[in-house]
Length: 202
Image (cartoon, rainbow, N blue to C red; front, side, top):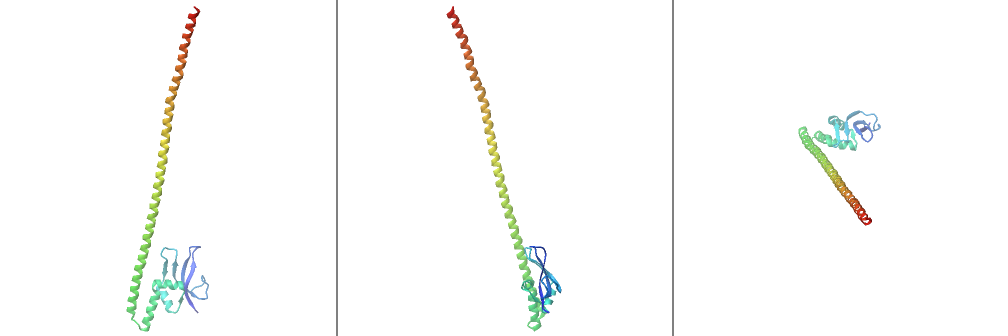
């Protein structure tokens, strides 16, 4: 029976998650499996790989064949390197202590690289957030400036209207006074004319 270490899909639509399983090569993708080794979640910024390294190593040593994707994940976790070093120990190319030291040094270097990548992603996310906030602040300031300008224009227009209204009110009494003055002159002229006519009759 050919045994494979492969992925079995689960999770909802467009948010797939996977189980890392050991299964018969003839079984369906999401069908029966022999053992579950861990999970793989590609939806996080740094893909979350949670695998039981010890059990995966034992299955590899027993002849289980990983698929290409699982092989990349096991290489990322150092399981394939451990298998390679263990084969060297079995063949007598190195001692177990030397193999363990090499594996430990590799794992330490890998963990530092992963931490650096996570820090870089976190810094980038913080910088992007700050840039978005700065852009939003600029937009809000421009909007507030435009509102202030419109308010000033409206106030200036209202003030101009008030000035025109007060000027109209001042002109109205003056016009009334000019209209009354000719009427009074006409009344004064009328009695003078009557007096001159009376003199002529006498």
